[in-house]
Amino acid sequence: MTLHRKTLSGGALVVLAILLVAVLLIVNTLFRGARVDLTESRLYTLSDGTRNILGTIEEPIHLYLFYSDKGTQNLAPLRTYYLRVREMLEEMAARSGGKIALDVVDPLPFSEDEDRASAFGLQGIPAGPGGETIFFGLAGTNSTNGRATIPFFQPDKESFLEYDVAKLIHELSAAKKPVVGLLSSLPISAGFDPATRQMREPWAVAQQLEQLSELRTLNPEGLKAIDAEIGTVVLVHPKQLSDDAQYALDQFVLRGGHLLVFVDPNAEADQSGQDPENPQAAMFADKSSDLGKLFKAWGVGYDAGKVVIDRLRALAISRGPGQQAVRHPAILGLTAGDFSRDDVVTSGLEAINVSTAGFFTLAEGAKTTLTPLIQSSSEAASVDTDKIRFMQDPGVLFEGYQPAGQPFVIAARLGGKLATAFPERSEAGHLAESKEDAQIVLVADTDLLGDRMWVQVQQFFGQRIMNAFANNGDFVVNTVDNLSGSGDLISIRSRATSLRPFTTVEALKRHADERFRAKEQELQRELQDTERKLAELQRAKSGDQAMILSPEQQAELKNFAERKLEIRKELRSVRRELDADIEGLGTRLKLINIVLMPLLVTLAALGFVFWRRSRRRAAVQGGL
Image 1: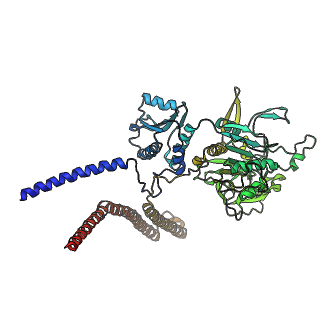
Image 2: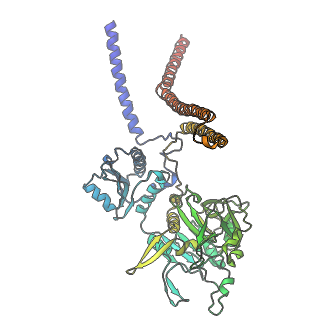
Image 3: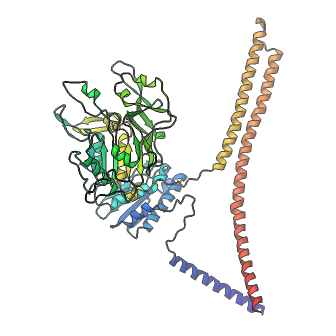
Protein backbone atom coordinates (compact mmCIF):
# COMPACT_ATOMS: atom_id res chain seq x y z
CA MET A 1 0.00 0.00 0.00
CA THR A 2 2.85 2.39 0.91
CA LEU A 3 4.71 1.52 -2.32
CA HIS A 4 1.54 2.15 -4.31
CA ARG A 5 1.12 5.57 -2.70
CA LYS A 6 4.76 6.48 -3.42
CA THR A 7 4.34 5.42 -7.05
CA LEU A 8 1.13 7.39 -7.30
CA SER A 9 2.76 10.45 -5.77
CA GLY A 10 5.73 10.20 -8.13
CA GLY A 11 3.42 9.82 -11.13
CA ALA A 12 1.37 12.80 -9.99
CA LEU A 13 4.50 14.92 -9.81
CA VAL A 14 5.50 13.91 -13.32
CA VAL A 15 2.02 14.76 -14.59
CA LEU A 16 2.13 18.13 -12.80
CA ALA A 17 5.55 18.88 -14.30
CA ILE A 18 4.27 18.07 -17.80
CA LEU A 19 1.21 20.25 -17.24
CA LEU A 20 3.40 23.10 -16.00
CA VAL A 21 5.60 22.94 -19.09
CA ALA A 22 2.52 22.80 -21.32
CA VAL A 23 0.95 25.81 -19.61
CA LEU A 24 4.19 27.80 -19.92
CA LEU A 25 4.42 26.99 -23.64
CA ILE A 26 0.80 28.01 -24.21
CA VAL A 27 1.24 31.26 -22.24
CA ASN A 28 4.49 32.03 -24.08
CA THR A 29 2.72 31.55 -27.42
CA LEU A 30 -0.45 33.47 -26.58
CA PHE A 31 1.26 36.40 -24.82
CA ARG A 32 4.42 36.66 -26.93
CA GLY A 33 5.62 40.28 -26.88
CA ALA A 34 3.32 41.28 -24.04
CA ARG A 35 5.05 43.51 -21.52
CA VAL A 36 4.08 45.16 -18.26
CA ASP A 37 5.87 48.38 -17.22
CA LEU A 38 5.83 48.61 -13.42
CA THR A 39 8.32 51.49 -13.13
CA GLU A 40 7.13 54.63 -11.36
CA SER A 41 7.76 56.95 -14.35
CA ARG A 42 6.74 54.44 -17.06
CA LEU A 43 10.32 54.34 -18.33
CA TYR A 44 9.74 51.42 -20.68
CA THR A 45 6.44 52.61 -22.14
CA LEU A 46 6.72 54.36 -25.50
CA SER A 47 4.83 57.62 -25.87
CA ASP A 48 1.86 57.91 -28.21
CA GLY A 49 3.91 60.05 -30.61
CA THR A 50 6.61 57.38 -30.94
CA ARG A 51 4.04 54.62 -31.50
CA ASN A 52 2.37 56.72 -34.21
CA ILE A 53 5.72 57.27 -35.95
CA LEU A 54 6.46 53.54 -35.84
CA GLY A 55 3.02 52.83 -37.27
CA THR A 56 3.57 55.06 -40.32
CA ILE A 57 6.84 53.47 -41.49
CA GLU A 58 6.34 52.26 -45.06
CA GLU A 59 9.80 51.07 -46.11
CA PRO A 60 12.18 48.85 -44.09
CA ILE A 61 14.69 50.55 -41.81
CA HIS A 62 17.87 48.92 -40.55
CA LEU A 63 19.35 50.09 -37.25
CA TYR A 64 22.90 49.29 -36.15
CA LEU A 65 23.74 49.77 -32.47
CA PHE A 66 27.52 49.97 -32.21
CA TYR A 67 28.64 49.29 -28.65
CA SER A 68 32.16 48.39 -27.49
CA ASP A 69 31.25 45.66 -25.03
CA LYS A 70 34.78 44.58 -24.17
CA GLY A 71 36.11 48.15 -24.10
CA THR A 72 33.57 49.19 -21.45
CA GLN A 73 34.14 46.36 -18.98
CA ASN A 74 35.24 48.82 -16.30
CA LEU A 75 32.74 51.58 -17.15
CA ALA A 76 29.73 50.55 -15.07
CA PRO A 77 27.58 53.67 -15.70
CA LEU A 78 27.99 53.32 -19.47
CA ARG A 79 27.15 49.61 -19.37
CA THR A 80 23.99 50.35 -17.38
CA TYR A 81 22.95 53.01 -19.87
CA TYR A 82 23.67 50.62 -22.75
CA LEU A 83 21.04 48.22 -21.38
CA ARG A 84 18.56 51.12 -21.23
CA VAL A 85 19.28 52.09 -24.85
CA ARG A 86 19.15 48.52 -26.13
CA GLU A 87 15.86 47.78 -24.36
CA MET A 88 14.26 50.90 -25.89
CA LEU A 89 15.51 50.00 -29.38
CA GLU A 90 14.20 46.44 -28.98
CA GLU A 91 10.83 47.82 -27.86
CA MET A 92 10.64 50.08 -30.92
CA ALA A 93 11.62 47.24 -33.24
CA ALA A 94 8.98 44.98 -31.66
CA ARG A 95 6.27 47.62 -32.22
CA SER A 96 7.26 48.50 -35.79
CA GLY A 97 5.41 45.59 -37.37
CA GLY A 98 8.60 44.13 -38.77
CA LYS A 99 9.66 47.39 -40.46
CA ILE A 100 12.70 47.89 -38.20
CA ALA A 101 15.58 45.43 -38.02
CA LEU A 102 18.06 45.89 -35.18
CA ASP A 103 21.64 44.65 -35.17
CA VAL A 104 23.95 45.04 -32.17
CA VAL A 105 27.61 45.28 -33.21
CA ASP A 106 30.72 45.17 -31.01
CA PRO A 107 33.36 47.08 -33.00
CA LEU A 108 36.57 45.51 -31.77
CA PRO A 109 39.79 47.52 -32.30
CA PHE A 110 41.25 47.25 -35.83
CA SER A 111 38.24 45.28 -37.05
CA GLU A 112 35.98 45.81 -40.05
CA ASP A 113 33.14 46.67 -37.67
CA GLU A 114 35.23 49.53 -36.28
CA ASP A 115 35.79 50.77 -39.84
CA ARG A 116 32.01 50.58 -40.47
CA ALA A 117 31.30 52.62 -37.33
CA SER A 118 33.76 55.29 -38.45
CA ALA A 119 32.34 55.26 -41.98
CA PHE A 120 28.87 55.92 -40.57
CA GLY A 121 30.30 58.95 -38.77
CA LEU A 122 29.96 57.59 -35.24
CA GLN A 123 32.10 59.21 -32.58
CA GLY A 124 34.80 57.12 -30.95
CA ILE A 125 35.93 58.00 -27.44
CA PRO A 126 39.43 57.01 -26.16
CA ALA A 127 38.20 55.59 -22.86
CA GLY A 128 39.05 51.89 -23.03
CA PRO A 129 41.29 50.17 -20.44
CA GLY A 130 44.29 50.34 -22.78
CA GLY A 131 43.43 53.72 -24.25
CA GLU A 132 41.59 52.15 -27.19
CA THR A 133 38.60 53.85 -28.76
CA ILE A 134 35.11 52.83 -27.65
CA PHE A 135 31.90 53.31 -29.62
CA PHE A 136 28.36 53.74 -28.34
CA GLY A 137 26.23 55.14 -31.14
CA LEU A 138 23.41 54.34 -33.52
CA ALA A 139 23.37 54.29 -37.31
CA GLY A 140 20.32 53.76 -39.48
CA THR A 141 19.73 53.14 -43.17
CA ASN A 142 16.64 52.91 -45.34
CA SER A 143 15.80 51.33 -48.68
CA THR A 144 16.90 54.41 -50.65
CA ASN A 145 20.43 54.47 -49.16
CA GLY A 146 19.49 57.25 -46.78
CA ARG A 147 21.52 57.48 -43.59
CA ALA A 148 21.08 58.99 -40.13
CA THR A 149 23.18 58.64 -37.01
CA ILE A 150 23.39 59.38 -33.32
CA PRO A 151 27.20 59.71 -32.97
CA PHE A 152 27.34 58.86 -29.25
CA PHE A 153 24.72 58.15 -26.58
CA GLN A 154 25.48 60.46 -23.67
CA PRO A 155 24.07 59.24 -20.32
CA ASP A 156 23.43 62.82 -19.18
CA LYS A 157 20.93 63.20 -22.03
CA GLU A 158 18.88 60.13 -21.14
CA SER A 159 15.72 62.22 -20.71
CA PHE A 160 15.76 62.86 -24.50
CA LEU A 161 16.70 59.33 -25.53
CA GLU A 162 13.26 58.45 -26.89
CA TYR A 163 13.03 61.73 -28.82
CA ASP A 164 16.49 61.32 -30.40
CA VAL A 165 15.81 57.76 -31.57
CA ALA A 166 12.30 58.61 -32.79
CA LYS A 167 13.73 61.60 -34.70
CA LEU A 168 16.28 59.36 -36.40
CA ILE A 169 13.57 56.90 -37.44
CA HIS A 170 11.35 59.77 -38.65
CA GLU A 171 14.19 61.16 -40.80
CA LEU A 172 14.78 57.76 -42.39
CA SER A 173 11.08 57.27 -43.12
CA ALA A 174 10.65 60.78 -44.61
CA ALA A 175 10.93 61.00 -48.38
CA LYS A 176 12.67 64.41 -48.67
CA LYS A 177 13.82 67.50 -46.80
CA PRO A 178 11.10 69.50 -45.07
CA VAL A 179 9.96 72.69 -46.82
CA VAL A 180 10.34 75.82 -44.69
CA GLY A 181 8.99 79.24 -45.63
CA LEU A 182 10.92 82.39 -44.64
CA LEU A 183 8.94 85.61 -44.29
CA SER A 184 11.26 88.41 -43.15
CA SER A 185 11.49 92.20 -43.30
CA LEU A 186 15.18 91.99 -42.34
CA PRO A 187 17.95 91.27 -44.89
CA ILE A 188 18.60 87.71 -43.73
CA SER A 189 18.96 86.04 -47.13
CA ALA A 190 21.45 86.81 -49.87
CA GLY A 191 20.41 89.61 -52.19
CA PHE A 192 21.13 93.07 -53.55
CA ASP A 193 21.93 95.76 -50.97
CA PRO A 194 20.69 99.14 -52.28
CA ALA A 195 22.80 101.02 -49.71
CA THR A 196 26.11 99.56 -50.95
CA ARG A 197 24.87 98.72 -54.48
CA GLN A 198 26.44 95.27 -54.08
CA MET A 199 25.28 91.72 -53.47
CA ARG A 200 25.09 90.96 -49.76
CA GLU A 201 26.01 87.69 -48.07
CA PRO A 202 23.29 85.77 -46.22
CA TRP A 203 23.33 85.73 -42.44
CA ALA A 204 24.95 82.65 -40.95
CA VAL A 205 21.63 81.45 -39.55
CA ALA A 206 20.09 81.53 -43.04
CA GLN A 207 22.93 79.37 -44.35
CA GLN A 208 22.27 76.83 -41.62
CA LEU A 209 18.54 76.75 -42.39
CA GLU A 210 19.30 76.13 -46.09
CA GLN A 211 21.40 73.10 -45.12
CA LEU A 212 18.63 71.77 -42.88
CA SER A 213 15.65 72.24 -45.19
CA GLU A 214 14.34 73.43 -48.52
CA LEU A 215 14.09 77.13 -47.68
CA ARG A 216 11.58 79.20 -49.65
CA THR A 217 11.46 82.98 -49.33
CA LEU A 218 7.93 84.38 -49.06
CA ASN A 219 7.04 87.88 -50.22
CA PRO A 220 4.79 89.70 -47.73
CA GLU A 221 3.40 91.92 -50.49
CA GLY A 222 0.53 90.14 -52.14
CA LEU A 223 0.70 87.13 -49.79
CA LYS A 224 -2.80 85.69 -49.50
CA ALA A 225 -2.12 82.00 -48.89
CA ILE A 226 0.78 79.77 -47.90
CA ASP A 227 1.67 76.87 -50.16
CA ALA A 228 0.43 73.51 -48.88
CA GLU A 229 3.93 72.04 -49.30
CA ILE A 230 5.29 74.38 -46.62
CA GLY A 231 5.05 72.77 -43.21
CA THR A 232 6.86 75.42 -41.16
CA VAL A 233 7.06 79.20 -41.53
CA VAL A 234 9.80 81.33 -39.96
CA LEU A 235 8.39 84.84 -39.50
CA VAL A 236 11.02 87.49 -38.72
CA HIS A 237 10.23 91.08 -37.67
CA PRO A 238 6.69 91.37 -39.07
CA LYS A 239 6.18 95.09 -39.75
CA GLN A 240 2.96 96.46 -41.17
CA LEU A 241 1.81 93.11 -42.49
CA SER A 242 -1.33 93.44 -44.56
CA ASP A 243 -4.55 91.85 -43.33
CA ASP A 244 -4.31 89.35 -46.19
CA ALA A 245 -0.81 88.28 -45.09
CA GLN A 246 -1.91 87.96 -41.46
CA TYR A 247 -4.98 86.01 -42.55
CA ALA A 248 -2.73 83.65 -44.55
CA LEU A 249 -0.68 83.00 -41.41
CA ASP A 250 -3.85 82.64 -39.33
CA GLN A 251 -5.29 79.95 -41.59
CA PHE A 252 -1.89 78.27 -42.01
CA VAL A 253 -1.66 77.74 -38.24
CA LEU A 254 -5.29 76.62 -37.92
CA ARG A 255 -4.70 74.01 -40.65
CA GLY A 256 -1.89 72.52 -38.56
CA GLY A 257 1.08 74.48 -39.90
CA HIS A 258 3.99 75.17 -37.55
CA LEU A 259 5.20 78.70 -36.92
CA LEU A 260 8.37 80.30 -35.52
CA VAL A 261 7.92 84.02 -34.82
CA PHE A 262 10.62 86.61 -34.09
CA VAL A 263 9.39 90.03 -32.96
CA ASP A 264 11.43 92.85 -31.45
CA PRO A 265 10.87 96.15 -29.61
CA ASN A 266 14.00 97.60 -31.24
CA ALA A 267 15.64 95.64 -34.07
CA GLU A 268 19.14 96.89 -34.77
CA ALA A 269 19.12 95.40 -38.28
CA ASP A 270 15.93 97.26 -39.20
CA GLN A 271 16.83 99.64 -42.05
CA SER A 272 13.72 101.76 -41.71
CA GLY A 273 14.23 105.50 -42.16
CA GLN A 274 17.58 105.30 -43.92
CA ASP A 275 18.04 108.47 -45.91
CA PRO A 276 21.49 109.68 -47.09
CA GLU A 277 20.24 113.27 -47.06
CA ASN A 278 18.82 112.99 -43.52
CA PRO A 279 21.06 110.83 -41.28
CA GLN A 280 18.85 111.41 -38.24
CA ALA A 281 15.79 109.92 -39.93
CA ALA A 282 16.89 106.37 -39.06
CA MET A 283 17.32 107.37 -35.39
CA PHE A 284 13.69 108.49 -35.10
CA ALA A 285 12.25 105.66 -37.23
CA ASP A 286 10.17 102.98 -35.55
CA LYS A 287 12.20 99.75 -35.45
CA SER A 288 9.75 97.64 -33.49
CA SER A 289 7.61 94.77 -34.74
CA ASP A 290 4.42 93.19 -33.50
CA LEU A 291 1.79 90.67 -34.50
CA GLY A 292 -0.94 92.41 -32.58
CA LYS A 293 -4.07 91.03 -34.20
CA LEU A 294 -2.87 87.42 -34.11
CA PHE A 295 -1.32 87.73 -30.65
CA LYS A 296 -4.61 89.04 -29.28
CA ALA A 297 -6.55 86.12 -30.78
CA TRP A 298 -3.99 83.67 -29.40
CA GLY A 299 -4.06 85.11 -25.87
CA VAL A 300 -0.46 86.36 -26.02
CA GLY A 301 0.59 89.50 -24.18
CA TYR A 302 3.41 91.47 -25.82
CA ASP A 303 4.28 95.18 -25.59
CA ALA A 304 6.58 96.49 -28.32
CA GLY A 305 7.18 99.55 -26.16
CA LYS A 306 9.03 97.61 -23.43
CA VAL A 307 12.56 96.19 -23.33
CA VAL A 308 14.02 93.72 -20.81
CA ILE A 309 17.09 94.85 -18.87
CA ASP A 310 18.99 92.55 -16.53
CA ARG A 311 21.87 93.62 -14.31
CA LEU A 312 22.91 90.01 -13.66
CA ARG A 313 23.18 89.08 -17.35
CA ALA A 314 24.49 92.41 -18.69
CA LEU A 315 27.34 92.01 -21.20
CA ALA A 316 30.34 94.33 -21.38
CA ILE A 317 30.49 96.27 -24.65
CA SER A 318 33.16 98.47 -26.15
CA ARG A 319 32.30 102.17 -26.52
CA GLY A 320 35.10 102.84 -28.99
CA PRO A 321 38.86 102.67 -29.51
CA GLY A 322 40.78 103.45 -26.34
CA GLN A 323 37.66 103.56 -24.16
CA GLN A 324 36.92 101.23 -21.28
CA ALA A 325 34.23 98.58 -21.84
CA VAL A 326 30.97 99.11 -19.96
CA ARG A 327 28.20 96.73 -18.96
CA HIS A 328 25.00 97.14 -20.97
CA PRO A 329 21.92 95.82 -19.13
CA ALA A 330 19.90 95.64 -22.36
CA ILE A 331 22.46 93.40 -24.11
CA LEU A 332 22.27 90.11 -22.27
CA GLY A 333 24.40 87.00 -22.12
CA LEU A 334 21.95 84.31 -21.06
CA THR A 335 23.35 81.08 -19.64
CA ALA A 336 22.26 77.45 -19.25
CA GLY A 337 20.24 78.18 -16.11
CA ASP A 338 18.02 80.54 -18.11
CA PHE A 339 16.95 77.82 -20.58
CA SER A 340 14.36 75.09 -20.22
CA ARG A 341 16.13 71.82 -19.54
CA ASP A 342 12.94 69.87 -20.24
CA ASP A 343 12.62 70.91 -23.89
CA VAL A 344 14.71 69.32 -26.61
CA VAL A 345 15.19 72.71 -28.30
CA THR A 346 17.08 74.29 -25.40
CA SER A 347 18.24 71.39 -23.22
CA GLY A 348 21.77 71.26 -24.64
CA LEU A 349 22.42 75.00 -24.97
CA GLU A 350 24.94 76.86 -22.84
CA ALA A 351 24.87 80.52 -23.97
CA ILE A 352 22.57 82.79 -26.00
CA ASN A 353 23.12 86.51 -26.54
CA VAL A 354 20.17 88.86 -27.04
CA SER A 355 19.89 92.62 -27.44
CA THR A 356 16.99 94.92 -26.49
CA ALA A 357 14.67 91.94 -26.22
CA GLY A 358 10.99 92.11 -25.34
CA PHE A 359 8.97 89.61 -23.35
CA PHE A 360 5.73 87.61 -23.49
CA THR A 361 2.94 87.00 -21.04
CA LEU A 362 -0.28 85.03 -21.18
CA ALA A 363 -3.32 87.28 -21.43
CA GLU A 364 -5.98 87.01 -18.75
CA GLY A 365 -8.61 84.46 -19.69
CA ALA A 366 -6.46 82.93 -22.44
CA LYS A 367 -7.25 79.34 -23.37
CA THR A 368 -3.77 78.72 -24.70
CA THR A 369 -0.61 77.74 -22.81
CA LEU A 370 2.74 79.54 -22.76
CA THR A 371 5.72 77.34 -21.85
CA PRO A 372 8.99 79.28 -21.30
CA LEU A 373 12.05 78.27 -23.30
CA ILE A 374 14.34 81.24 -22.56
CA GLN A 375 14.00 83.58 -19.59
CA SER A 376 15.90 86.42 -17.98
CA SER A 377 17.08 86.21 -14.38
CA SER A 378 14.74 87.12 -11.53
CA GLU A 379 16.76 90.34 -11.10
CA ALA A 380 15.54 91.68 -14.45
CA ALA A 381 13.36 94.74 -15.03
CA SER A 382 11.74 96.45 -18.01
CA VAL A 383 12.13 99.96 -19.44
CA ASP A 384 10.51 101.93 -22.23
CA THR A 385 11.89 101.25 -25.70
CA ASP A 386 12.34 104.99 -26.34
CA LYS A 387 14.76 105.18 -23.42
CA ILE A 388 16.95 102.62 -25.17
CA ARG A 389 16.75 104.21 -28.61
CA PHE A 390 17.93 107.67 -27.55
CA MET A 391 20.37 106.55 -24.86
CA GLN A 392 24.03 107.60 -25.05
CA ASP A 393 25.39 105.96 -21.89
CA PRO A 394 24.08 102.48 -20.94
CA GLY A 395 25.01 103.25 -17.34
CA VAL A 396 21.87 105.37 -16.99
CA LEU A 397 19.83 102.15 -17.09
CA PHE A 398 21.25 101.23 -13.69
CA GLU A 399 19.93 104.44 -12.14
CA GLY A 400 16.78 103.78 -10.14
CA TYR A 401 16.94 100.10 -11.11
CA GLN A 402 13.97 98.20 -9.66
CA PRO A 403 14.06 94.39 -10.29
CA ALA A 404 10.72 92.75 -10.99
CA GLY A 405 11.52 89.84 -8.70
CA GLN A 406 10.61 87.26 -11.35
CA PRO A 407 12.08 86.29 -14.74
CA PHE A 408 10.77 87.65 -18.04
CA VAL A 409 9.85 85.14 -20.77
CA ILE A 410 11.92 85.96 -23.86
CA ALA A 411 11.07 82.82 -25.85
CA ALA A 412 8.27 80.30 -25.34
CA ARG A 413 6.14 77.59 -26.87
CA LEU A 414 2.51 78.48 -27.49
CA GLY A 415 0.12 75.54 -27.31
CA GLY A 416 -3.56 74.74 -27.15
CA LYS A 417 -6.51 75.18 -29.50
CA LEU A 418 -6.62 78.48 -31.41
CA ALA A 419 -9.51 80.56 -32.71
CA THR A 420 -9.23 82.61 -35.89
CA ALA A 421 -8.32 86.29 -35.63
CA PHE A 422 -10.58 86.96 -38.62
CA PRO A 423 -14.05 85.67 -37.70
CA GLU A 424 -15.60 88.12 -40.18
CA ARG A 425 -13.97 86.50 -43.22
CA SER A 426 -15.58 83.67 -45.11
CA GLU A 427 -13.28 82.62 -47.96
CA ALA A 428 -13.47 79.10 -49.32
CA GLY A 429 -11.91 76.67 -46.86
CA HIS A 430 -12.03 79.20 -44.02
CA LEU A 431 -11.41 77.69 -40.58
CA ALA A 432 -12.86 79.25 -37.44
CA GLU A 433 -10.66 77.28 -35.06
CA SER A 434 -7.89 74.73 -35.05
CA LYS A 435 -8.63 71.03 -34.79
CA GLU A 436 -5.35 70.20 -33.08
CA ASP A 437 -3.10 71.92 -30.56
CA ALA A 438 -0.99 74.70 -32.05
CA GLN A 439 2.75 74.26 -32.59
CA ILE A 440 4.14 77.79 -32.33
CA VAL A 441 7.39 79.13 -30.89
CA LEU A 442 7.60 82.84 -30.03
CA VAL A 443 10.85 84.79 -29.65
CA ALA A 444 10.89 88.43 -28.51
CA ASP A 445 14.20 89.36 -30.17
CA THR A 446 15.45 89.47 -33.75
CA ASP A 447 18.96 90.66 -32.92
CA LEU A 448 19.92 87.17 -31.75
CA LEU A 449 19.76 86.16 -35.43
CA GLY A 450 22.46 88.63 -36.43
CA ASP A 451 26.01 87.39 -36.90
CA ARG A 452 27.55 89.85 -34.44
CA MET A 453 25.62 88.34 -31.53
CA TRP A 454 26.90 84.78 -31.87
CA VAL A 455 29.37 84.02 -34.68
CA GLN A 456 32.52 85.26 -36.38
CA VAL A 457 32.43 84.75 -40.15
CA GLN A 458 35.68 84.81 -42.12
CA GLN A 459 36.53 84.25 -45.76
CA PHE A 460 39.05 81.48 -46.39
CA PHE A 461 39.94 80.78 -50.02
CA GLY A 462 36.45 81.71 -51.13
CA GLN A 463 34.74 79.75 -48.34
CA ARG A 464 32.84 81.29 -45.43
CA ILE A 465 34.23 79.87 -42.19
CA MET A 466 31.99 80.29 -39.14
CA ASN A 467 33.33 80.26 -35.59
CA ALA A 468 30.44 80.39 -33.12
CA PHE A 469 30.94 81.85 -29.64
CA ALA A 470 27.30 81.44 -28.54
CA ASN A 471 24.42 79.02 -29.23
CA ASN A 472 22.07 81.42 -31.03
CA GLY A 473 22.36 79.47 -34.29
CA ASP A 474 21.86 76.16 -32.50
CA PHE A 475 18.69 77.49 -30.91
CA VAL A 476 17.21 78.53 -34.27
CA VAL A 477 18.23 75.30 -36.01
CA ASN A 478 16.95 73.15 -33.14
CA THR A 479 13.62 74.97 -33.17
CA VAL A 480 13.10 74.73 -36.93
CA ASP A 481 14.25 71.12 -36.90
CA ASN A 482 11.79 70.34 -34.13
CA LEU A 483 8.88 72.19 -35.78
CA SER A 484 9.66 70.64 -39.17
CA GLY A 485 9.05 67.18 -37.74
CA SER A 486 5.64 65.63 -37.54
CA GLY A 487 3.22 66.54 -34.80
CA ASP A 488 3.90 63.14 -33.28
CA LEU A 489 7.62 63.89 -33.06
CA ILE A 490 7.02 67.31 -31.50
CA SER A 491 4.73 65.75 -28.92
CA ILE A 492 7.55 63.59 -27.52
CA ARG A 493 8.78 65.40 -24.43
CA SER A 494 11.64 64.69 -22.07
CA ARG A 495 11.26 61.52 -20.01
CA ALA A 496 12.36 60.62 -16.53
CA THR A 497 15.76 58.97 -16.28
CA SER A 498 16.48 55.46 -15.01
CA LEU A 499 18.85 56.89 -12.42
CA ARG A 500 17.10 56.78 -9.06
CA PRO A 501 18.92 58.88 -6.45
CA PHE A 502 19.29 57.53 -2.91
CA THR A 503 17.35 60.38 -1.32
CA THR A 504 17.40 58.91 2.20
CA VAL A 505 21.17 58.38 2.08
CA GLU A 506 21.66 61.89 0.71
CA ALA A 507 19.52 63.30 3.52
CA LEU A 508 21.64 61.44 6.08
CA LYS A 509 24.81 62.83 4.50
CA ARG A 510 23.44 66.37 4.47
CA HIS A 511 22.49 66.11 8.15
CA ALA A 512 25.93 64.75 9.03
CA ASP A 513 27.67 67.47 7.00
CA GLU A 514 25.67 70.13 8.81
CA ARG A 515 26.74 68.71 12.18
CA PHE A 516 30.32 68.36 10.93
CA ARG A 517 30.43 71.98 9.75
CA ALA A 518 28.91 73.17 13.04
CA LYS A 519 31.67 71.41 15.01
CA GLU A 520 34.35 72.78 12.68
CA GLN A 521 33.00 76.30 13.14
CA GLU A 522 32.95 75.78 16.91
CA LEU A 523 36.59 74.70 16.81
CA GLN A 524 37.50 77.70 14.65
CA ARG A 525 35.78 80.08 17.06
CA GLU A 526 37.61 78.55 20.04
CA LEU A 527 40.90 78.82 18.15
CA GLN A 528 40.30 82.50 17.45
CA ASP A 529 39.28 83.06 21.06
CA THR A 530 42.47 81.33 22.28
CA GLU A 531 44.62 83.40 19.92
CA ARG A 532 42.95 86.56 21.20
CA LYS A 533 43.58 85.62 24.87
CA LEU A 534 47.22 84.72 24.14
CA ALA A 535 47.70 88.08 22.42
CA GLU A 536 46.23 89.92 25.41
CA LEU A 537 48.52 88.03 27.81
CA GLN A 538 51.50 88.74 25.56
CA ARG A 539 50.80 92.47 25.53
CA ALA A 540 50.60 92.47 29.35
CA LYS A 541 54.14 91.02 29.72
CA SER A 542 57.24 93.12 30.09
CA GLY A 543 59.85 93.38 27.35
CA ASP A 544 62.39 91.02 28.87
CA GLN A 545 59.75 88.25 29.22
CA ALA A 546 58.30 88.60 25.72
CA MET A 547 59.86 85.34 24.47
CA ILE A 548 58.86 83.29 27.52
CA LEU A 549 55.42 81.71 27.89
CA SER A 550 53.73 82.69 31.12
CA PRO A 551 51.87 80.10 33.23
CA GLU A 552 48.59 81.64 32.08
CA GLN A 553 49.57 81.24 28.40
CA GLN A 554 50.70 77.68 28.97
CA ALA A 555 47.40 76.89 30.70
CA GLU A 556 45.45 78.49 27.87
CA LEU A 557 47.33 76.49 25.24
CA LYS A 558 46.82 73.30 27.23
CA ASN A 559 43.08 73.93 27.54
CA PHE A 560 42.82 74.59 23.81
CA ALA A 561 44.78 71.44 22.91
CA GLU A 562 42.52 69.34 25.14
CA ARG A 563 39.40 70.94 23.69
CA LYS A 564 40.74 70.40 20.17
CA LEU A 565 41.14 66.69 20.85
CA GLU A 566 37.59 66.51 22.21
CA ILE A 567 36.13 68.22 19.13
CA ARG A 568 38.14 65.99 16.78
CA LYS A 569 36.73 62.96 18.63
CA GLU A 570 33.23 64.40 18.18
CA LEU A 571 33.89 64.94 14.46
CA ARG A 572 35.01 61.34 14.08
CA SER A 573 31.93 60.27 16.02
CA VAL A 574 29.70 62.17 13.55
CA ARG A 575 31.34 60.35 10.65
CA ARG A 576 31.01 56.98 12.38
CA GLU A 577 27.34 57.63 13.11
CA LEU A 578 26.78 58.50 9.44
CA ASP A 579 28.45 55.28 8.30
CA ALA A 580 26.43 53.35 10.87
CA ASP A 581 23.17 54.97 9.71
CA ILE A 582 23.91 54.16 6.06
CA GLU A 583 24.95 50.61 6.91
CA GLY A 584 21.82 50.17 9.04
CA LEU A 585 19.66 51.42 6.18
CA GLY A 586 21.35 48.97 3.82
CA THR A 587 20.81 46.13 6.28
CA ARG A 588 17.11 46.99 6.61
CA LEU A 589 16.69 47.08 2.84
CA LYS A 590 18.43 43.71 2.48
CA LEU A 591 16.20 42.28 5.20
CA ILE A 592 13.10 43.54 3.38
CA ASN A 593 14.22 42.23 -0.01
CA ILE A 594 15.69 38.91 1.09
CA VAL A 595 13.46 37.93 4.02
CA LEU A 596 10.32 40.01 4.32
CA MET A 597 9.13 39.98 0.68
CA PRO A 598 9.56 36.19 0.22
CA LEU A 599 7.88 35.71 3.61
CA LEU A 600 4.91 37.84 2.53
CA VAL A 601 4.63 35.89 -0.74
CA THR A 602 4.80 32.61 1.18
CA LEU A 603 2.13 33.74 3.66
CA ALA A 604 -0.07 34.86 0.79
CA ALA A 605 0.34 31.47 -0.89
CA LEU A 606 -0.43 29.62 2.36
CA GLY A 607 -3.45 31.85 2.91
CA PHE A 608 -4.69 31.07 -0.59
CA VAL A 609 -4.22 27.31 -0.01
CA PHE A 610 -6.03 27.53 3.33
CA TRP A 611 -8.87 29.48 1.69
CA ARG A 612 -9.21 26.87 -1.08
CA ARG A 613 -9.25 23.99 1.45
CA SER A 614 -11.86 25.80 3.54
CA ARG A 615 -14.09 26.21 0.48
CA ARG A 616 -13.69 22.55 -0.45
CA ARG A 617 -14.42 21.42 3.12
CA ALA A 618 -17.50 23.64 3.20
CA ALA A 619 -18.63 22.25 -0.15
CA VAL A 620 -18.21 18.64 1.06
CA GLN A 621 -20.10 19.33 4.26
CA GLY A 622 -22.86 21.03 2.29
CA GLY A 623 -23.16 18.02 0.01
CA LEU A 624 -23.58 15.75 3.03
